[in-house]
Length: 348
Ligand SMILES: Cc1cc2nc3c(=O)[nH]c(=O)nc-3n(C[C@H](O)[C@H](O)[C@H](O)COP(=O)(O)O)c2cc1C
Image 1 (tube, rainbow, N blue to C red):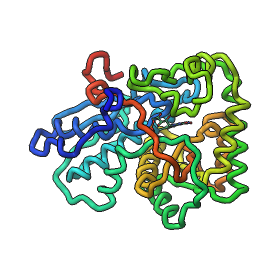
Image 2: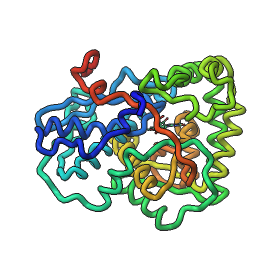
Image 3: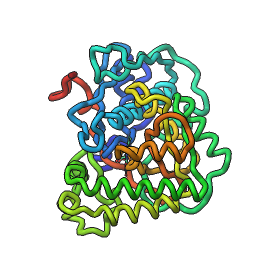
Image 4: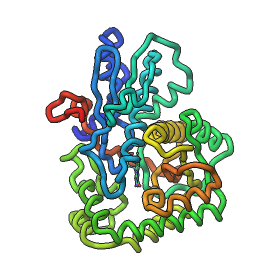
């Protein structure tokens, strides 16, 4: 596999079963970094100790325009944390988890202490096996509805992490959300700073950088490919994006809003773990997913998303779910590059 995709080639046989806990934790981080992250910023850093690992948000990888409070950065780190937990269990280790263990260190999100060996449940094995298979797929999905059993399993996955998942399958709700996505697209694309930030993270040559969104994954194959970042930066193609996203939302078998009761960093971290739990569970059911978060990102539209669900609380992510074609993975940096004390990485 090419170097920029090498992280996906992780093999269970390489787990250092007889090694030190710190070596085992370093190996487990190989699963954490396969998590999804906003714009594939991979905004996480980890510090290894003898028997525990600390998970930090990396403020250098912030997106001040689309994510001014770091909400989606924390969600992304939460997704990595869920992978770390699932991998710990798979390799037969109980763990203790402390979230926000030191108020003096705002970017320290969690500390996971690797404990004694424990039994691995069948659910853990399935979730674990889904980690390297999960992808964000922006392709169209086949119009097969989700069964009630699958829907319930996805809702339970979110609830297990202290969040809720509201599935929207009726035409009225789907159309209402599709309208909100299109409205948000128009607003975001009319903002030059939004376009500039997005262009910074789009990759023309993904094999040369280990982060960011490769152009084909963004579904812009029909553009003048080599000029795409320049075009994103320069032109407001909000109307085109809105029309495309409205259609993709309307024709998805299911849309799903993941939400939490509160809107604090602790709730965002829980939401990130819930997001990844839902995505892995979806993968186990051969479902693909992609994100239509725009109306949650735009001030003023988030409450309209909540109103469609009829739930109390705060929408954190808007997903579309369905069955579709296989897609290739996106690049990842190596575990070494996201360890604190690696050259250039310092805790803030
Ligand atoms: C919190 C969060 C928000 C995201 N928002 C969007 C989004 O609005 N639109 C989108 O196309 N992808 C979105 N993504 C997906 C990322 O672009 C994707 O995870 C990243 O490119 C890595 O690719 P992968 O998921 O296939 O591993 C989001 C991911 C996360 C975790």
